[in-house]
Image 1: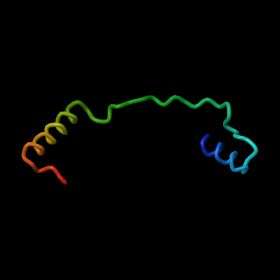
Image 2 (image 1 turned 30 degrees about the horizontal axis):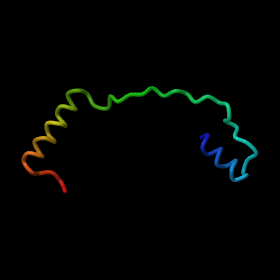
Image 3 (image 1 turned 180 degrees about the horizontal axis):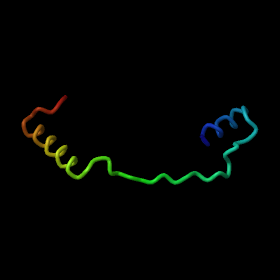
Image 4 (image 1 turned 135 degrees about the horizontal axis):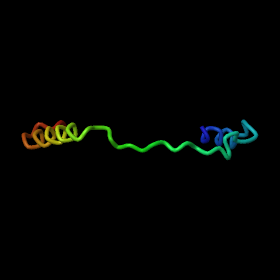
Length: 57
């Protein structure tokens, strides 16, 4: 939202950014999209397709 208000201020649509000075909340970072088992299955399937020559393209 700060980006939107900064843009609006540069375009002279608003006198100032009402979010200036407001701290952004820190989002928890997570890379756990797949379980360990799911990653193993995905990689195994990719390797099997690569070895069999059935990759799309």
